[in-house]
Image (cartoon, rainbow over all chains, first blue to last red):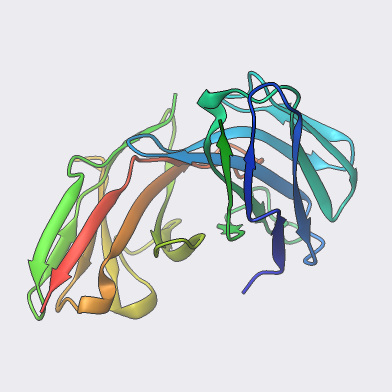
Length: 119
Length: 115
């Protein structure tokens, strides 16, 4: 299994409070992603990172921010949680493509998920 | 724009029978295609991928998938289903021209194999 740890695994919070989810990897991979999973929607990308301090928005980034100060850690922050952010959040990493290859053909490796409930 | 469709929310099959989970895709260029499986309260696990070459791809746990460019499909198959195959299956696609590795996922298909 890829070395990906998400914390906390479960959290219940109240509307309006800040929440930070942490993703920690031991694979030294360059690319990291935050997805959310909701019934009927599959997985949707929130933010992703392609290096330390290099991040960009995904398709559902409103209300979320991220930071990556070290290769191994990718933080997802909800500045003021809302009930619509109740979801299961997954961190993923992808392997760097080998030297000499133009494109990354590797699959994503996922963490075990963080279940967030906003009351 | 990239998108993936899994037309069936639920697939039910008897143990020992063949199973098929359908996936169609839309990408601007040539795709990389993936299948993932998710067991209850777990993360997604990689099953198989199509990059290039043979249209029939073999993966983990006896699963295989057939890439059909003309029908823009990538259906997941297994000749003989097991009860332990019961799980949520996701098809995913990425543009071959993307260097960032981000995937676009379908909504998932719940597979139930009954004894």
